[in-house]
Image (cartoon, helix red, strand yellow):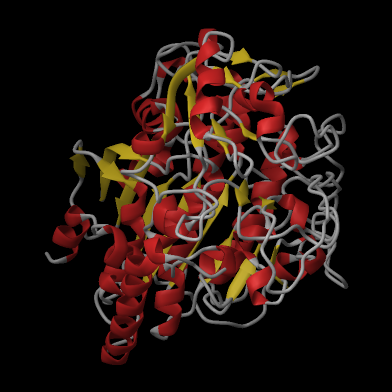
Length: 570
């Protein structure tokens, strides 16, 4: 989309400077011109710093008190362990991945949530799979604004593992599964659909490295995460995204990384989605691990001849499922106390992912690239609450419910067939044009107890970290008017199938593990404050390129992880 108004003059200038610097620096060298030839990024979604601490040290009450992640622990012996890491805010997966890939916060990326709102766009042509209604769009006319669906709803068919991509094999949809009729449209661009890679406003490490001659690949859970390649749609050479919210099907010839067949279906009662079952999610993650190993071996994710990527990686869903699911007739995952003692189900998911990490490291060694690969293990987000006694499922007294008719209909709970408000354990609110923000704030504050409100951010309390939002031409059309961060444990959902969530600003949501490893590194623990946005410039720098090629570095001053630079310089 196009940025408009005087408020964005500085943003546009910074982007222009970054682009010109980009061209000059790209001529000076190619990706992988230094000691590191490959960067492998792994996101274990939901993995807190304390989860890594417990699994590497052991905790009384599980596994006889013994450690239970030997492969991650071995990596840490030649790695830098960052223990005070903050993910994106909001801590939804979409801005969480944008932070890792681009080095930017929502202020520069424009990504606040997978389901958010944009005052400068119009509705898609057709209703999305998750309920966002289609609507009109008149080329070059004033937009009406629309909820933005960058979840599974943009698939041709989100009930299928391949996303309904025409002619695709059982698991392989990727960007071919994006239905352009399900994409929001930009009236200032002739009502063209806005693809995920053009929804993000700034470039990414993957795009920078691709432009510098590096082969790039990424594996994720929805086709919408193809934004990782950055604007233009050319930043990824290989993208794989089996649909995690699809109906579970048998996977002939596939076994989990622990050797259990995925045909027949492991958990026949949990087939509504792969992430609804502790057992089925392991089969889902397995197909992504095998795709990643194909790439390590110099193939595409499906096994055709290719290059070993300069930058690549994947996300895991198993730990997140272990933290958050309450599966009927099976039991609950999550934690047993505030010390993050895992339930048996969560313990098994952490063990499972650790086994997969072992397989990935073995593949790097077998293919002779372990020594010149920088491995980064972190998470897009955490999960809240860790303390199980604090969880409250509140689906009736939510900020969006209280505001009702004051927020756009596509976001409002009054729309019973719609996609719903942007609420998890946070409430991100955009108001209708003409509604005074102070009026909405007064309503929320008068019912603060009922909605479990911990803090309300608007106006000057949003301004330091986000662009000024609103309906004027000089405003950022994506910045929310209000963000409500509830008391720890309060989740704006009536679901009994979940025992936690993420998206909020709380410590449990945002404090994630980060381990950066290479065989040449000495073990190191860093307790000073660090952020996941520092991953992107670090990846660019590690491959011998100038981190200032990233527009996030130009616009937000995002820093490289200095400890990594020091270790690589040895």
